[in-house]
Amino acid sequence: MTERERLQPIRWLCAGLVASWTWKWRFFTGAPAVYAHTPLHDPFFPEPLQNLSVLVTAFCVPILIAFVMFVRPSALFARTSMAAFCTGSLVLNLHQGSYNDATFVTSLWASLWGLWYLHASTRDATELGVRAAFLAQIIVALLFFGGALGKLTPGYFDGSVLYRIYFEKRQHWSFAWLRGHLTAAELRYAATLYSRTVVGIEIFLATLPLWPSRLALQLALVALGMLVVLNNFQLLSVIGSLMTLCVVGLWLLRRAMGDSNPRPTAPEAVALSS
Amino acid sequence: MAQPERTRPSWTPPAVEFLGAIRRRRDRPAAVLCALILAYALSSVVCALDPNTARFFMGRFHLRTQSFAAWALFQPGPWMYNFDNRYWASRRPLSRAELDDPPPDVLMRQVNHQSARAFTFADNRPRLLRDAGLHYFYLESRYRSATVLTAYVVDVEGGSATAPRSATVRRLGASDD
Image (cartoon, rainbow over all chains, first blue to last red; front, side, top):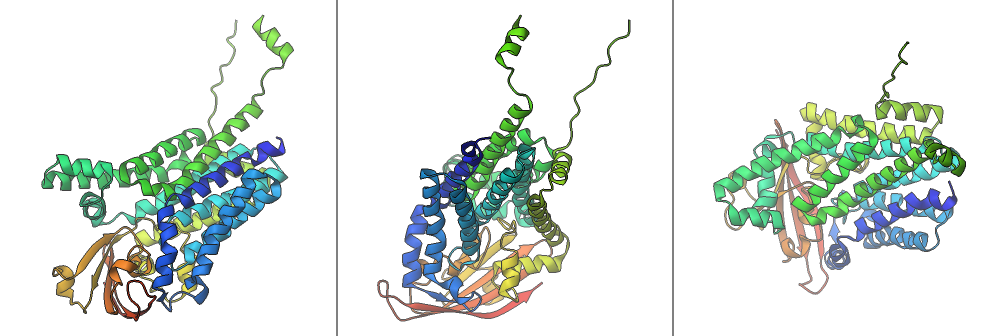
């Protein structure tokens, strides 16, 4: 594997992470002004994690380093970029102004995967595809496993939680369409069905490690895409890192299969065709 | 003439293949990453089975964990869309009866997670902390038989819609079932 090929998954991961972080750019460009106008003093958070400059630095530095990585891809910039995303995600996960955005949970796990990949591909690239794909599978599975268990409560079984969050007022096309075509009672019933289906999909995604890697990552991509299209386009900021991880895992698996079944050389191809 | 023995392609579960690969390649970072994932998955299982652990995790959403370190430890975990979470925002203290049947001057919202976002997050601060004075927030999370309720008051001082102001958060109390 050439250096360029080795770094290709990290370039894609960087692109996915930058896209995820900037997907809600309107919010992130407006939030600093709000935080500066009305700073909130809360003894729960340590002082640096209430500081606006820390928030802005943790958000901007990884994005800037990722752009350098796109322009001049090298092992050094790849490592720096993944370490920056990892540190930035961790800080943003704990900061008063961003702790509630799950974008930084998924990007933390994706960047940890990136750091692992850079380490593993330098030391021993054998069976890299198997390891990379399975790690991607269990990261996606973990996030949905917790999501599924956290929903095993009456509010999700009867659909009342998702009814109030999405069905009542959310302007997303799917909910607006349902509101326009169903009676109040039918809408409430649709919320119950929808809520149970979401829990079912999450339980399915939690079983990903039990499935063959290629199929698991393909199914995960479809399920994650459906969640975004049907629920909320803003979710792409949370799901984007995971979708990129699935794509990169699939690419590495395909490469691994290519390496274990090398194409026949020209004389072999002639012999096979005759 | 003896038929050649037909062998069926064998399929190894990816977990077994993965564990074999990390053992053969001595891939310790992968083992550490796996252990982390397992630990967080296990914490979700314990939360589902034990009401006290569920109260701890719901208390995280209310920013009332005993120590910041304990809260931070579980922040990378899978907490998205967990529990049945609500908050009430009001300019005066509320009774339990008013929480159950909110009067028109009380705002009640269902939230997907991290209920304390009601006053910490940028999308709510301009709306809910617009006027100077005391603002009361009641956060409630339910999970199966466990319920956690926390009351906060946010004191907004000085400033105006354009001039900077400052807000201080104080926890009024908590009750768990």
